Length: 206
View 1 (cartoon, rainbow, N blue to C red):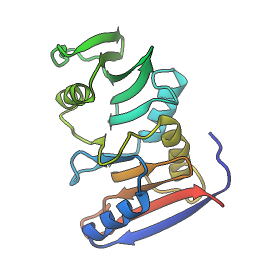
View 2 (cartoon, rainbow, N blue to C red):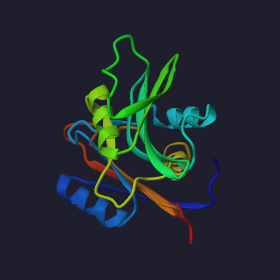
View 3 (tube, rainbow, N blue to C red):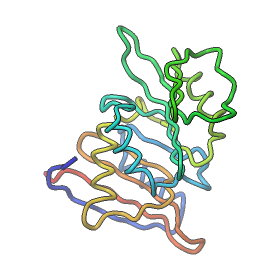
View 4 (tube, rainbow, N blue to C red):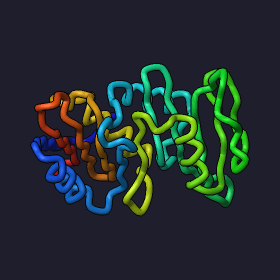
């Protein structure tokens, strides 16, 4: 997806607390995603391809709100919030495995097709609990410390600018990210033990 002319800001931090303080200051009230394990982060080398693929095949819609995600080399899982009739529901999407976790009694089976198994839940807590049971939280991000989860349309739009545009960030382990209509920011863990935290922000030129 093409975006209007954007500005890019990159900052580095040696101190973790300073890096996180800057992230939350820049995020403001914007929806954000935080790594479930802040020592490991979320690998981003497959993120852009996964976002494009799920959009192309219609698994995730542009107006879905992303509450949790895990992207591995050969699989992915997510929890999204979407409107179903007059209600808001939470849908878990994950790989169809030979030994899946037990069917959640709180949810209803939505899809059980080659490669994808999906359940719907009436409450976020039940959907997130199933997501964590299925993924163990390894390399996952969760929507936390915000009033709402980020929209897929904004994530796709700004991930393209962050990772695919000239001067883009090199995919690495994501610690935290925020996404809004006018911009986005991502904080990455140090690539090496003696390296720095890196914060990338893109926004529409005013």
